Length: 437
Image (tube, rainbow, N blue to C red; front, side, top):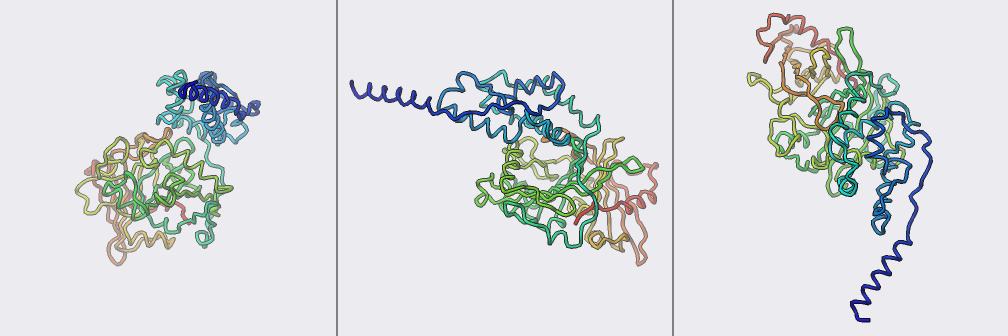
């Protein structure tokens, strides 16, 4: 036999031997299958169950080594993240969160995996199927489950006593002074979110230097339960959690260049059971890999190439403003469900001194700015809304040694006789700051 023949024979033998090395893919019963309407369950069975269930549904070519090893790895990893055969054993809020995440992965093209769809075209989710799934979840037409966390007040030393996350990341107490880069109204779980950035993040957003975000960038995402006031407006209620993202491309190379942490409740308890919780973070942010794993669209006037990278619409405030309130600190927010608008209250330095001192009286020199936008759908998260085009800016300034309210309406609302300036000024100054440690 010549050399070529020997190589071919060796290759055939080696290929055949590989087929004998076959670690099992466990097949288990569906112990707690999540209850879904037949049309929604059909979508999941067709597009998700091959990996995200206890069923073993491999095509003949999936059984061939060495590809089988990759298929097995993907299935075991997928089950660990989300298993529809056991999802029904989790609380209702967790079940719903998993379904919303599934829709978002589909919507952003991250699931089913493009490589999987290339070999299994029947798994592709059609626009009609997406519409069916979204209509079933209907975040704005049904009561969503709010996070189940005890309320209460923060201890005076809550920040200093907060334990590091299980991966070693400490809670950066400076986050309470960072600037708001975006806000979110989450209809999927009835929460409001402030997305704050440190000075590095803010400067990067203002200059458009976010592809990728520079080392030293830090984000804090703060969540509050929603509560409806007697006036019909929806305000931040009890504190839910704060999440941190810290960028260092080299130090955190194994976790996509970011470190992650989450602290829940007024006792700021670390979320993870062990350091492995980071897998949950990185897999959740995988669909926005093209945006350096960042879901939020910062409000900035900087032009950044690409689709849905920044929120230029919300950053376009009236040019007649003497100062840009988006560069101030945020105090609170609310949503008017009747007009589908979202408003954020900002304060200048003098106003923020009052807020941080937990005082109820703003001093002379303090200025508040209530910025109102039309809401628009968040392109990165089904079930969330973010600021769209600005509607108006209301300014309240405390003047004189005995502060008097000076009210100014800027934007499309100028000259609107329906507005009572004194009543609006009193309303704005009475808005309670969102709960922070």
